[in-house]
Amino acid sequence: MTRVLLATRNSGKVAELQRILAPYGMSLEGASYEPGPETGASFADNALAKAREGVAETGLPSVADDSGLTVDALNGMPGILSARWAGRHGDDLANLQLVLGQLSDVPDSRRGAAFVCAAAYALPDGRSEVVLGELRGRLIREPRGSNGFGYDPIFVPLGYDVTSAELSPEEKDAISHRGQAFRALAPLLAAALPA
Amino acid sequence: MTRVLLATRNSGKVAELQRILAPYGMSLEGASYEPGPETGASFADNALAKAREGVAETGLPSVADDSGLTVDALNGMPGILSARWAGRHGDDLANLQLVLGQLSDVPDSRRGAAFVCAAAYALPDGRSEVVLGELRGRLIREPRGSNGFGYDPIFVPLGYDVTSAELSPEEKDAISHRGQAFRALAPLLAAALPA
Image (cartoon, rainbow over all chains, first blue to last red; front, side, top):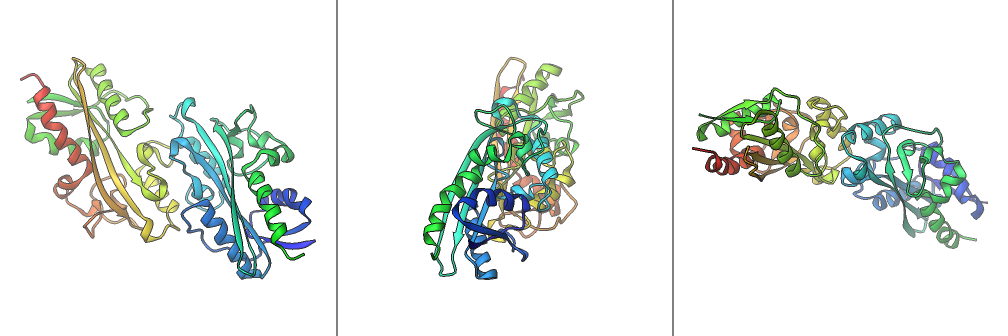
């Protein structure tokens, strides 16, 4: 199996992407270095920067994503700041509770949102690629479900009555923004890797 | 002096608007009722709704504003959610610290922002008017100054080296979003009031 670095230390993401990329014969490993700050102005900028940082740190072909929740009533934010929305990086519960607080007076008719993912690869020879995936839905008022991570417990995908955190991992992969983006990226990466 | 209701319980706003509207011979009084939630989709919607609520509660000609900070790197948010950005209404320090935390990785070149104010009046006979004022500037990384309120300590107006909270009340009124909006509204209201 081809070794590929997944340029993140988020174990939830590593587990999700291992499931998605396993059929392509890639062996994903998480990052052991401390990634630099994300200073890009878009999901795509950040995903590419993280993949290139992975190559620079390890010399391995690297994949990365930048994902987040874009909330209509917040003009598309938290967006690229999803992981640090409450002010500190990675406090999922605080981030989710903050969005609920910010939206507490926002009526059901204006609670649309989308999960967006930019998935990128970068290779040691300098080639790179980035693709986008999106899952539309709406935000409820109280968290439900214990699968997933991040904002999953307050997000109900379009056409569903359950939250992303109430879906099984396999059900979530089939529709998720990250699943869509990495299923689009995987064949591009597989074709670009040395045989 | 004509009695006019200022449909807010924010004492900082009452003081600011009393200074601005005093030359027009209006006697402003703050609201004693508990205003309803702000559920409009824009500053102008909210300002008009608050002024109309003031008329309904008191029978007096009423003025109101909806103001906020629009941050470029937050796609124009906190915007209409400025007063409850940290999740609870009116915690100025928490709101300001949250914006600083959200922007901690955002470079100086992308820290533009504006204070925006919609000022509205509503009269017992059903007439109403709304006007906008804006003050452009940028956000610094640590609060400075003790005048003003809200996000003033982290906002440096365009062309200045000091924050809005380091300006005297008179200097701030001369350039502020709220000053601009209410100086535009005042003559319209004075002309519309019964002699």
